[in-house]
Image 1 (cartoon, rainbow, N blue to C red):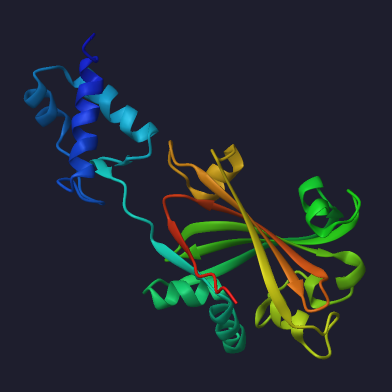
Image 2 (image 1 turned 90 degrees about the vertical axis):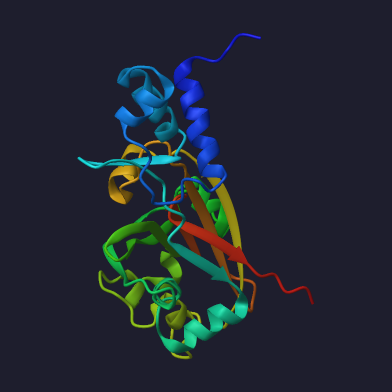
Length: 254
């Protein structure tokens, strides 16, 4: 069997050290000079090994400091019906509440609100023809000023035109509160969320807005909200860097 190139051997040795816990998340790896001497090679070869592990999403660089083992996800999102209802009554957005409970300072930026023709993947989830007018609220979620998620929240214009959903401002208690408000446009209780998850590499604009390092994939999560009548009232299209979150779902079986 042909022996692997030396840069791959170095990369494999560092990867094994991470997996065994010898190099911990957030810890700096040995310097290029240390690795060069340990493996009796050149800094060029060491840099190729480090570049490979960066492309794999295992290492990150800090300007002027060196390479570090990528930190573990920073925010755990717990998804349960009871959790949603508890957050709903508090008036605080669920993401903010979860991040705050984990010691993070969370906030949301409202980037834009506009009425657009429904893209194919959104129209399909609302079960309406492609191009049907929808209101989209574009947000960016941050924790300790680090960008964590991009969320495009879609609502049928026929149901929400003329409401606070169409205004370019934050809604106290969130859109969920407006949906369940006895004086609101829907006046029904949210009873179900359906989530679909896809994993892919980020597009250039997503890399920029979320400050995603090379080699890190992105999770795209579609969440469809249903009210008691069965009507679909909300579709959330979230883009989430895979190095910043863990997701935990608790499914109660009746």
